[in-house]
Length: 422
Image (cartoon, rainbow, N blue to C red; front, side, top):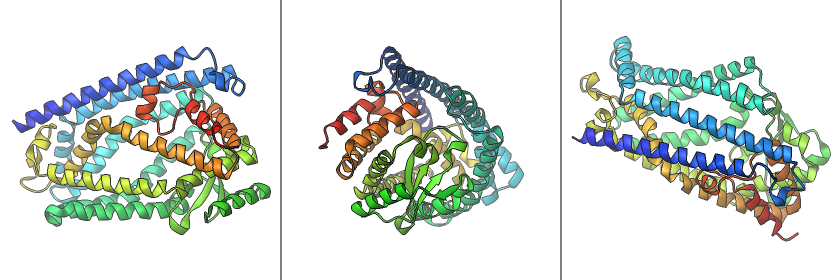
């Protein structure tokens, strides 16, 4: 009774999500194409028509690609759940390993392998067809597959011990296992913030100290004015993979470092780079990073508590096409984890605008911070160049943007900056 009701609820939410995504995407495509013929008035003197049309075409192509991936992923989700894919994987893993931790890890590895193989053609198409078509791909096929291998090895080296600890806690620590698992997960996230800049990221990219003495002096002056301490200024060879440009800072506590894509440094003037960095520093000084981490920890605690409830309910498994009694009374915690991760996005999709709203609020605040500590006109000119270089549409559908976009639309963001005191 409960399992049938949960199956109906799951399918209903999945269909609702698909309808909403297709509706939003179709609105977005129509809106972008309707404004393709002319550059918006506020950008008319700054961005050529050809660049505006390239951005429109790129946006439409990405949106259509996203819809194709959505259809395939939804079919795969149904295949894994209601059509018995996970049940088959579970039986085969059990046949090979028998009960216990080997079975749990084998099931997770088999699921990850199948999922990765399904994703591979889409990743390849995105890089070597979509990005290539619009001139953004700089990656060779050898580098693509080398990255894939590195990601797999690094993921296994980091992920398997973590999963083993989580599964052990689920099995050995009783009804409050999710509290202990949350503590482990939170500690792991903080550890990754420390290790990623110095241990993991250099496995994929080369980081060299910023060599431009004048630019370094300008940036150090900005950091001094806003009270930001950094472990160093680095340039990342992003151009070996993509023509897109960006800047960010990573790390945690005393381990913070500022990183510029080489593509960004090649395009922006020194004062524009300073303004972009001031925006990024604004996120730090206004405690956006801390707030996001706190929200992430609270949400993960709530979700783990929910998983703690669901993993003991038979209808959660049978309603998703899985027989949890395969192990003759032994826990099937790996299956609970997989099912939870598969269906959670279906039930939380309609909450996405809340995340987008919070992120856009932070972007406005960081822009205001940058306008206080640098010239707002420099940030505007930098953003215009970045919109053009990254082929970011200047005319997104307002509802699509409100639902998905972590940054405000270009016209709204620049209009706000132009109101800042000069």
